[in-house]
Length: 344
Ligand SMILES: Cc1ncc(COP(=O)(O)O)c(C=O)c1O
Image 1 (cartoon, protein in one colour):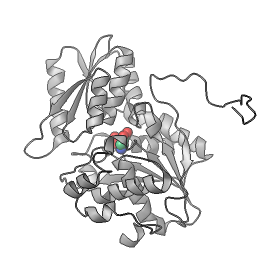
Image 2: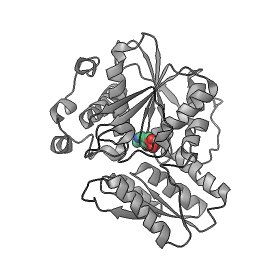
Image 3: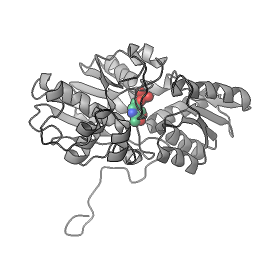
């Protein structure tokens, strides 16, 4: 409605299809690193219906299984998830008439687990094994369920090529269309590496010069990393996923959990965007790189999920003090234009 009360034509479709992902907008971040020199843009995938990029992945995984004939009406879908894929699959499975069993571990956000249950999913929580590798324990539980539950199939997000396809066909083309051309640098957080690999495929196919930066967690086993206890879900992996064998980021950052917290809080305070831990890691990675980037260069990042589910962890001072090393520095409010540049 315009100020004089007349209706204004809108470019958005008036009826959206809520069975899968929605195209997401891109916004400029001009307050995050004042005077930083680069033009920063964020693709807001926290606006997906279940709150994350995994809404795209879930749609492509289910579509591929249906096309292959492996998913028949009334079938059971089983998947290991740290939360976001589980919420997206739970939502899309209930719409398509499938039973969904989500195999999670105790680091999954409480809100994510409750959301899956609200969509009618059966949540199967695995105990933390003696070696601490929760991801491996989840994958083993999926294997067991596939044997035990008649007609069960898995979407296998760690090795299924439909996972990167989602991002090659939707995430990257949308981003480039929004920006009017490919960004000079793209920062993507990694877990299965599906998002990064899909963006890489789109970049290679089109011959774009975008430098692709993969953001991982300290303690993740991806790309030869040394496995260690991690407290925050969403990024990193307990083993080198099959998809990661094909992923070739131009650079990799391994970010500490203190820096994830710091990045999330900076984004919230300076840009008014509440995001999850992996997006905080991306903010930190950009902060570290910014001093070496050519002024005027365009930098794009994905906001992989929203921060609501992380209010009891990333945004809770008590939790951060109890669980994260170097907590005081991470939770302190700072006026430094780029609090990461002086620590690089
Ligand atoms: C919170 C979060 N971080 C990171 C990622 C990237 O994960 P992947 O490498 O599995 O695509 C996702 C994907 O949706 C995500 O939801």
